[in-house]
Structure formats: C-alpha cells, structure tokens
Image 1 (cartoon, rainbow, N blue to C red):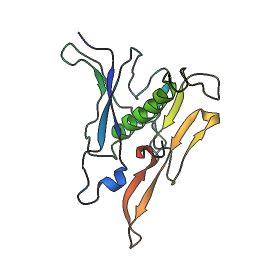
Image 2 (tube, helix red, strand yellow):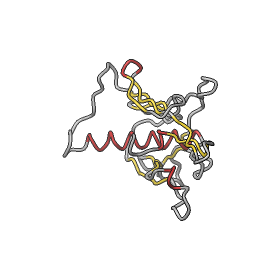
Image 3 (tube, rainbow, N blue to C red):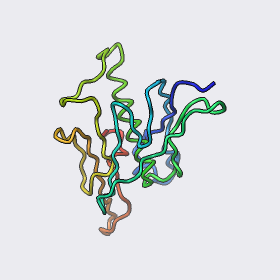
Image 4 (tube, one colour):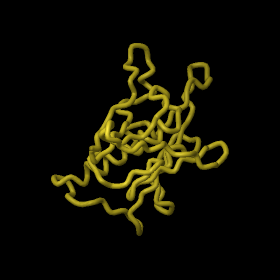
Length: 174
C-alpha cells in the first residue's frame, strides 16, 4: 500500500561554491513531506505553485512531473532528469518549491505559529517564479502574489561569464 507523502528534494548548499575543487558534488538533499494534499505537476499544491517562465521568450515552461506513489514505491516524487545540473528547469522548480514549503512548514509548527500562514492578499496560493528574469535580485511582489527569483552572470577575473547564478537555488535568499 502506498504511503501518504511525497519525497521532495532541495539544494542545501550554495551551488555556486559547490563546483569549487574538492567541494561535495551532491547538490540535492531529500525531505519527506507527510501529507494527503494533492500534488500536481509544476510543482503545485493548494497553497503553493511554481510558475516557470522562460526568461528569453516569456513562454511558460512545463513544470516538473509528479510521479505518484505506487504499490512498490511508497511515496510520490517529482522527476528531475539530471540531479547534478542546477541549470535544468525541473531541478530549479523542485528545489525552490521544496525550500519554500519547508519554510512554511517550519513557521506553522506548534511551537512557532501553530496555524497556517496567511498571506497579505485574498486567497491561499502563493506563486513562485524561479526564473523571473536576468538581474541579481529576488523579491516578493504583492500585486502578483508571487516570490520572484532572478539569475545573473558570475564573472571571472577577465570579465567573462563563468556561470549563471540562480537566486532560486540559494537557501539563504529563499
């Protein structure tokens, strides 16, 4: 019989530093969310939805696919094709979703608020945009009911781009 829950993955370290020589190469850690709430592709739940937009075209990017629990796999999970590639959209979608959900869960625990979070807008679903555009920033946008994460180029000593930094993958920013 399948369990009631989902295995979620998230970045626990600054992935920009993780590529340094001798650094741990495993970027994702797991979290088992015990829940009977409906989980949808995106990831999407009743209270949190990832809306990923291609920053170059403005087109909506397909969300990470939810794989439901089965008789042989006790918990559902979101598919991430390459768990070592932080530029993969599903990697970013699942990681930021899990981190935001974990922070919400932490604040709702009995020894903190002991109640569900309430947003400063009518409705209960917060939108999260992992790649809202190119700039070194991330912010809450009240009018759109969303957390917007951006990305920027990290430059080497010669001024050339050495990698893109995604704020949606920084646990300190989220």
